[in-house]
Image (cartoon, rainbow, N blue to C red):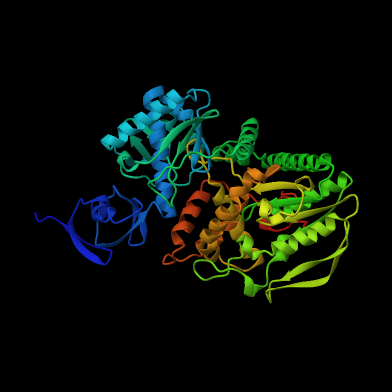
Length: 555
């Protein structure tokens, strides 16, 4: 019988391959030409893992570690390799119960929950075991299982978090990965074998280990770990609070929704945020000489709602807050710097008239009366509309803008007159113990539904500009996180179940031939984990209201 063959077009070249050829074999000649490792392919517009076989004539494109989807595949594969090493060295339960909690710089923090001592010796053992699998290119095998069989499998391997997750899956089957007797479930794609994970390091940290990985920009270099103690403590506090109320994973959240007690969870979460905001206000007042509250955070962190709620708390303590937006100090449009692509770069520090801001704030600090500017975004110029300001004994300025934590932004103001706050939506609820939810996903979904509601922008546009937004955050916000006097986590444990109903229709509108389609499809699959709930029971001052609508604040 004649062997079946297929026509495959890749990089403008058409080749003929026999049935049974993997995509790994097809992209192998192109691996050396790439600075980033090729980890996935798209076949006629659908993403496929490299161990999949060609089964029809097709056009193939590939993704490297420099692409978002390729990079996350590397991270995911390295995570399973870490857990496999723990499984080999310390047993089934320590691997099953280790929790992948959050990223910190180039480190992925994995809490071993006191089952593996976080020592240098154990970190070395884990790394050596991982390298053994890298050397022998231990394969990752993928197979489909019925939901019931998967629940039975993971239940027998002490992964009750996955059993709870699968209880709410609508599909009849799930994909399971296996690596030499270690079974796990992952949300997303995997590399073909451990040999692809060549660059990583392991160090002990707090209650577990940091899995250090290269960046998308430099996929073959693992930078030394840069500690961010304040950010870690903020993330850890949110994670511990979730543990206390029994809300660590999506399965826990879905259980609470089904039990009819979500309204109580919403009230408890909102009360916890209000308590934290009150504590920050108290810290500000106890300083005694604070006149400028500088608030900064990445896109869709809820800065506006937070500023309003903080101002209310300050009023209860006898202060008179006044909001100021750093955006009102933009330089006139013709003086705005351009980015690499020739577009206005509104997110760089040079887009702000720093000198004028410092002059105005210094005059206010001296007790002088000044006229504050308002930036007219339609004509691209600063205007003066009679907004005069003079600070009394109890007056305090609440200043919001992405450069608020940068010392250069307020160079002329004495440190004792400033109180800096970093705010971000630091998602701490996990899909399950081994599948964390990136904080950027929550913020992207927040921005998507707000842009659609307030600006008429479709999801395709929001996703398309997200990479540029993220680049601006990494350059202008994240380097100054640790400058903050206080950090506030605006993420709400329940919010993705609420956001789902608003985000899904927007994502479904993105056509298959659009570059943003892959990201839309990934987000839709992600939202499928959550049961849907209405926003009716949300308080009207909730940060979530800033995005879904119905806020009592002017947001």
